[in-house]
Image (cartoon, rainbow, N blue to C red; front, top):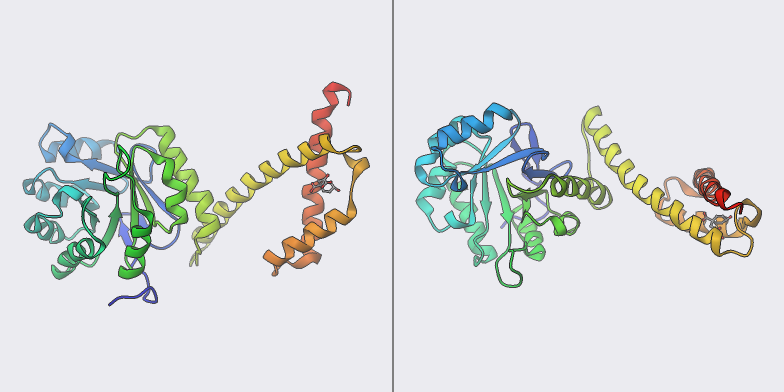
Length: 306
Ligand SMILES: O=C(O)C(=O)C[C@]1(C(=O)O)C=C[C@@H](O)C=C1
């Protein structure tokens, strides 16, 4: 039995790596990889793929509408998606695994963890170990299927394989899925641009807080730093708003009402979570942050003559 101690088997989908590094967003236009569901297309597979490829050179994941689509997929896609509807069709699963492409294995809505991992095992038995699991949930609770995040977590731990959360068009659970450990978010091909942007933001900001990264190159390390800075910026913006509220509530606000004791205490508290920096290095950082907040509060009060 595989355990969480085993090195996670990251899978490359074209230029995109799933399972190590940042959370990836797959789906419609604006995402890092596109998803093409041939079940929704009228043209033959080859034509539909040529159309998509004419406008997109990046990673492309394709779900077949029938076994006959597989050769066209092998020729033009970066991964084949074995959707929930196919997981009971073992000949198709095996044929998909033999294409030589990574396989995304979606859990059937009623499948248990064991049944789901057994489908992945069928792919591995064909000599294809480039498997990504996809948890999209069942139809038990809400009109739209929603991923079972506990199951996603368990699948990731048990298999050591990357797991993506299938969110469809509703990206309301994007942040929760990233926090639960999803390696990627899989959206519908026809999802709105706004939903894609929301998923990308959740992947960056929540991923920065919850997902350890060990980048091995300067661009990867800069990418990781950019994600941490994105989370820092969100928190700094929130902090400046709260600091403004407190200036209005205090009997004497602004620079005149500065409270050095409170500033020392909050730096000491932060040093517990940032021991590498420690109080001495955090103090000037927080001084700059606090003073920026006080300047903004004074600017905002100025028009009222306050
Ligand atoms: O806690 C306060 O009294 C505030 O005004 C907020 C705040 C801060 O930004 O955290 C700002 C100025 C004070 O010197 C201490 C803290």
